[in-house]
Length: 268
Image (cartoon, rainbow, N blue to C red; front, side, top):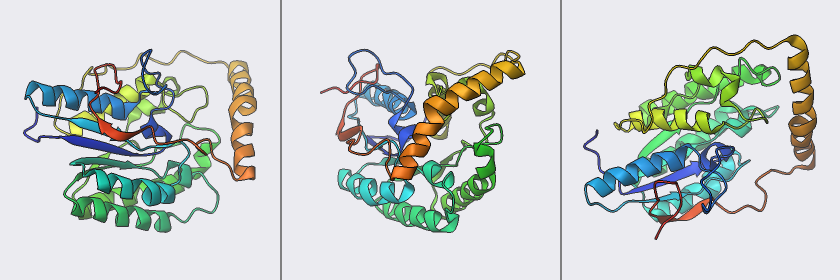
């Protein structure tokens, strides 16, 4: 439990915060649930128990680079006057060749200053450690520098940090969807539980230890890799070549603050 009273939570970011590959309940306003919806549901229950108002907005859009999050979502969040903001991005930047990590972290810090100065508690997140990801492993150095910079920004400005880099469960391939980029429902649940702990709240469903991974033969791994390359990697490369993003033309997930039901759906 916590003595902190949250009245409005606004989540900013890319596909991780949009909740991709964590299916929402039937009839929900958006096809994906995700860690932020899960956290908001617990915060709403805490508020209801104390007979307090609580609402939630999610401005995340899949595929967004950090500069786009800062330019598009941060000003919109400031207008909503939240007391809790998650600003999580950079994952789409660090996997791109030629990214200058110091530039994107400077952008992040400038946005953090604006949000902190507004009086909001700010939640940041490190990058994921790609040491087990065959093709993404080459970006590990860049991702590690970004993660270190996030911790430094948080220390300077009093932010909370979701330590995605240090989550051992995320080294398990069962936490990742078929595209190997987005978390499964179980991955989102474990992220949500860590955020709740950072906020001083009990996890909704404390995760148990993972069972050992079943053995996988070399031929099976090759077949899975071939399916992934055809179904996910080549389309991703094609979008990069054309200068397109999976989020082009999509609106924010939940642009207007509103109550949230236990199923993660919007409510009046």
